[in-house]
Image (cartoon, rainbow, N blue to C red; front, top):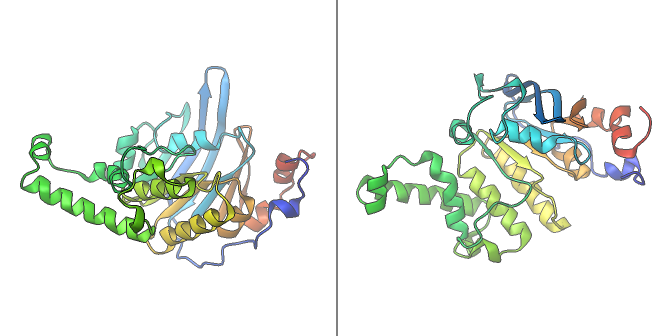
Length: 278
């Protein structure tokens, strides 16, 4: 990125034009977390708060530790140090399934759908944390298990309508265009009914039209469904346009945090992206 100008990096209007009610208390508190892989330190003493109802973006050059941070929050990595609180409850050492059941869902940088399953069935997989029917009743599909299945399908159909996937609901996800598969993965995360949604490069690899669609859905998830969002994204125009707060990582460390207009003029951030001296 050394040949870019600051203006090219931040080419959209700064600051979200969409007013949202943002709570004062953080829904997520990350305190001095670190992650080591043998002698390699991927994340070093990173702290951040995510206010209830907000959109917070984590940015930084490749290898800055962004995905490792999300993996610790979602339970895929166990922090080597530090603590993570969700709604005041410590989740530092909980398993991914336990964290999902508490109300945190995520998408992945590399699409993690089952290509042979339909759009509906992939979204249904996100309902597993809410399924209460026992194994035997689920196998024979009788009584409460059948009623539960119907209720879960109704919730998934509502998500399909929300994401405008009605026309492809029965198609195998592997046959879809890239942008649509990204949307299906978002749908599967929404099926968890999260209060906090972690998005790892939701617009990575998309063309401009697909990005615009995804931005609209992200804003609708936040505004209409009341979901707090923590996202990693490389499109700086999008980040600066929709975020309430931006956290910048470099080499595993937090080097800046603040409102989009503050972060984009921070000398440490400009140096991290453009390679200049701080």
